[in-house]
Amino acid sequence: MSNNTVAVIGSGGREHAIIKAIKKSPLVSKIYCLPGNGGIAADAECVSIGVMDTAAIVDFCKEKSIDFVIVAPDDPLVAGTVDALNEVGIPCFGPRANAAIIEGSKSFSKDLMKKYNIPTAAYEVFTESVKALEYLKTCDMPIVIKADGLALGKGVIIAQTLEEANAAVIEMMDGGKFGKSGLKVVIEEFLTGPEVSVLSFTDGKVVVPMISSMDHKRAHDNDEGLNTGGMGTIAPNPYYTDAVAAECMEKIFLPTINAMNKEGRTFKGCLYFGLMITPKGPKVIEYNCRFGDPETQVVLPLLESDLFTIMKACADGTLADTEVKFSDKSACCVIYATKGYPEKYEKLLPMELPCTDCFLKSYEGNAATADIYVAGAKLAEDGSLLSNGGRVLGITTTADSLQEAINASYALTKQVKFDGGFYRNDIGARALKAL
Image 1 (cartoon, rainbow, N blue to C red):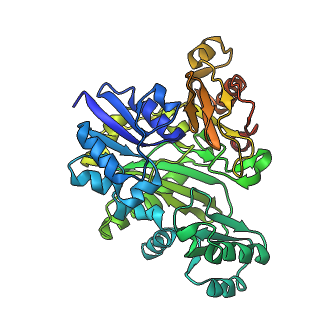
Image 2: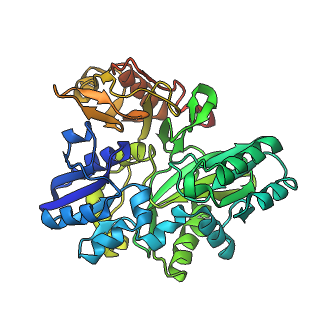
Image 3: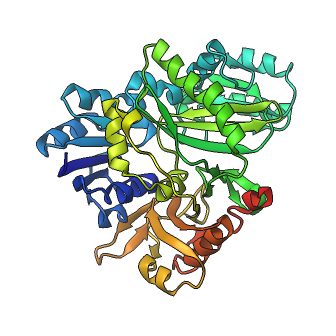
């Protein structure tokens, strides 16, 4: 089983975190990343094939005799990249298209939860804006409006007033704001309580939750500004107690895996549970069919077992016999984004990254590990890094306590030279208050 050649599909910080983790495995000898980015190029051989070019991905994997493929982003999973690779005999980490629909269609996942009594917010689904607008008149505010399909994590509007709710429906359904993804919408009740992200490994039979995490979605400090793909994360999430974890396993995690099996949609890979700990107990806000970004950047640095072995076990159906062990340390990831994100921003701005090993040696605090995951960058001709996206870097450290991990992440962040960038200064502050 050693000397595996692995291909990772994707180009962001999540993919960089996965690659750095599987690189540690003695079973992995060569890693390709399709298409990768300028920072990932330091840890894998990048190949300029787009994530949605399924035919080219399959041809490349056959030509290079790839042993195992990790399909990381949602779009190719929903489009059936795993199916296409499986058809030519290449095993993959990630669900087939008929299971990836759990993220690909919000209405599918809501109907699944209703059918199998999995706790979630009350909701209705609409395919005509006139009927959606009529329904909104009967709703309490605030209300949540979701585009049915994939929308880069931005297809969810929390409307505080009826006017805002009406505008969101018209923009999505009539204005084409999210293309085809917004032609059908889910309108659901607004839940309150702390949010928790739980990624889990599953082979379709057992489900093994990873360490919990807390995302910070708003662009600016104090949860102000626009919703983003995520401006930072911490792990573990203090709101996710042992009692909450036990309730989630009994009422949410296992029932979801069993429901998908009953529907003939066995899910293998990473199933992400976005949860709200409401006054009436934990409820599902959303499912993702893959590793979250930037949750992956704090969860994988705390994994002590061999990630590649676990991923193989998810594909092979042997997860029950495989060790999945996490450290009892804490992690913090600060996202360095380009000024203007999540709206308009410049690209190809120069930046310099500090040496993480040098940082650990000189840092006077208690940091155990330090990593800089590159999400959006390309290499200049002289080999230097240039920004090439909204979220550019995920700066992650682990330490014995959450406070120490936060301190270390910000100390490392301050050593990055990126004049065109910005970051939040309060990642983890909410979690510290909870502690």
